[in-house]
Length: 399
Ligand code: FEO
Image (cartoon, rainbow, N blue to C red; front, side):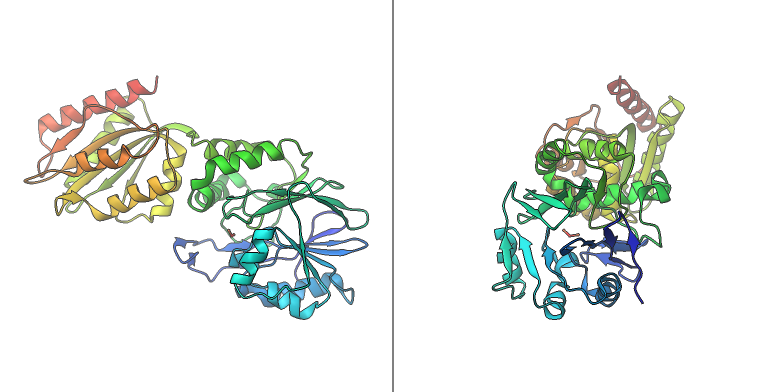
């Protein structure tokens, strides 16, 4: 049975949801599931925009059949070849043998690498190329490294629909909803949108900026991403989020405290600092245990807040491993422009502060505050005074 949504008079969402997958890309937890969006345009020609992950291919095929009936599929536009969208290409090629595959030259190469035979069916397009499918005209806009090199987006100039590939995507299964105005995006969805962006695309901020500049010249009425809701109003809200995330500007003035604690003593120091901040008036404080929080959530929160406190015990004369992994991920995702305070703990040779400082020094525009706090095993009265001073220093740096 097909299960589709109509977007415009001629355009249908023919994707589906996966609530069973535990880890997106086999690395990021998705407790709320994920959608794989595909879109079908019914004009003088019929045009499919991207396919879906193999896990929902059966539903996808039913959806296409439900919309097309006995009509042939004339074109399949492939904006992105990552297998969460491309895995079902071959199934379409088998069922609709006359279909032409519209994509970039690099996408042809990737499809060959993934084992899809599109010989004789590829229509290679480049930046600015246009096509007409009848009433609907489209222009192809390349978006290299958002977040793969073959990526393009397609803009339907007739109805103002941007097929945005992974840009503007969101984790979370749709559960019958499709449009942004059918959900309370600020409650739950924004967190998952940020976690999706920062972990999947976050490294490529300058490339996202290039795409946003190109998109700024288009009269966009709908944004159709490959994951999550379709945007049909209030587009500026989400574009503004992308503007901040892709320039690594924090969304909020606030303090994210991430601690690594083996027996609770570093945790006590982290909570003491949080309490000092709140008592001194900075209530936008979030505290996380690095050992109990998946790094994808920490990365998302790190993009959100202006200030970061890293508190780590020393372990084998190094940074506690989960804290080290978090810092390495932060660097890999190009995080920058944050004010950071450091707190180390060690019973005989505290090292973690110096080592965290070295890693932060490899990132751009990270301002490390004084004083750096060093604790021996557990907090004492004088450590409390130092942490109160650090809270003052953090608040002062926000002015
Ligand atoms: Fe959703 Fe880059 O694939």
